[in-house]
Image (cartoon, rainbow, N blue to C red; front, side, top):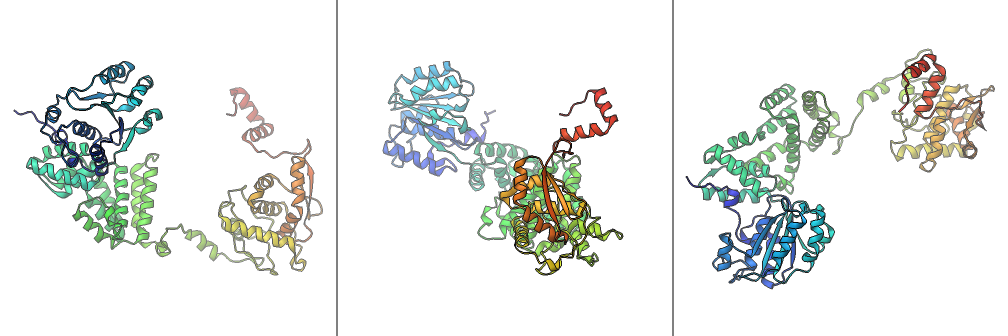
Length: 597
């Protein structure tokens, strides 16, 4: 029985012209050989299986060829070339740095460098996986690498360029090898199949090329595996079965179900996929890639980005005509969110099923035609607010309006729920009222993070209110502490960006209404905060007069005293306050010796 040689070794390139997918690098090396401009050290970088060591061997063979050809290739007939082909050449030394990475190994290499070649001009030292050398070995190698004998050439190969010392890289010419394209790998596999007498479908070779992820050695290894399974006739179905690859047909069928809103069929198809042993995350990433291919298929200029056979590309173009870009945008976003949340999900199958259900409802989404970029539309909220009955004093916006309209006995300002602190208000702000028109007892909320437009609108209203107040339009309505606090925090949130520090201070302050019902007191923690409050006092009063519809609103300030109740800012302060108020909590803390971490 003959010794079997795997395809990756049997069909390893022997000349620069037979190297696949690295045309620019091989041309540069050939030109350097022809012109005699050879460097003393080269660094070949790139992923696995793209031809680094192969090009190093071809380079070593070519520069020692006694009768080189006109195109820069080795003749293959001279004594040096024959010795290289028969693996008995003394001019080429290979060192695996993964297992020979000590200082002693480098010293032995340096001793060999001193001996000149017996046949040919150069001794070539190929150090594979050079990033595995130890720090001491690198340092021992530096001087020889910088100033080697004229007959010595070093070729360092690595898959992890970032681990090479800068002092080593500065002494080498660096060549970056790229991943091979699917078309290049398929073309080479066709040649190998033809030489081996194997028939192979083009779609099957495309699957092998994609599985190889740009590495020719991986592609040839997979080719050998599949050819053994198929018995010399490589078909698409046998290939995906052997490599455990999900069939394209599932993705095409699911997309048709999404467009036709067939949720039941989507669930059954997912069950069929999972029953074949495919992981849910593998399926969802493949589905997102399918949507991406559909999107690029809609434009003839980007259709070439699809790495698939011509038959599959035709299917993509046909199905792409049925899909709107908005549908594909939203579907890709749903698939991406599912992929991100998959590992954290406790019920992974349910997560994938919910994603498919949402995709099946995208085509009937009312917002799909609103623009190219999908937007979130809170229809239930807006519909509910639109149908609410308006009060005589004006409609409230956001959660305050909803609270008032659902409380029949509530007065406009006295029963409005106190909103959460800064950055937690989530209701959209209502449009500003025209000048000269009573603003009513409603309060409008804005979010600091909702964008520059809302902030500018708030600042403009505050500025206009400060400049002039039409006293005749104010009805001097009564208000309580709750309404005052709401208006106070609304002013704080609406401060411009350069006053962010003051806004945060105001957000934690609690204004207290005095006995006259129109003057309120604000307690400052320190003199600097009190000075800042006094500076913006006219703006605060003008804003609150408009919001509370009372031109008698006045603000007074003072420093905090020891007897004043202090607002709790931190978790420790909140805990101490709770301990002061609850004897049971104190006993629990003392008995179990609890501490806040």
